[in-house]
Length: 88
Image (cartoon, rainbow, N blue to C red; front, side, top):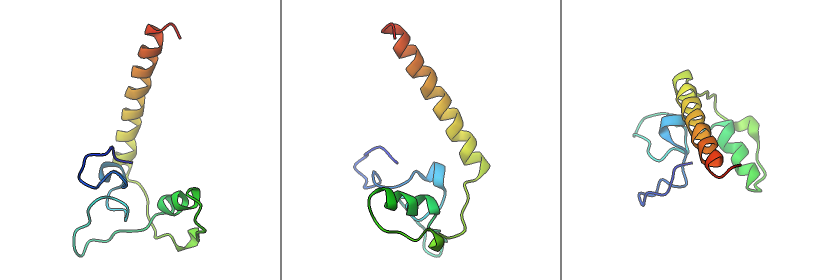
């Protein structure tokens, strides 16, 4: 999810990760916006009854996945550094 920015995108997926998926902050007129199984399962996590079979065909691009792996790796290194400072 996006961090709150005051632009109304804090309840949406990041376009840098999810591309044009329905729950990203902006969609261009005429552009497809598939409803992914990821979004449907998120609604299930919130307590809604869902039918995952209604998900549109959707997959993350490999460039989006690679970018997220790099971000997670950097965050893990920062966390490890922080914890070592505190002797944890």
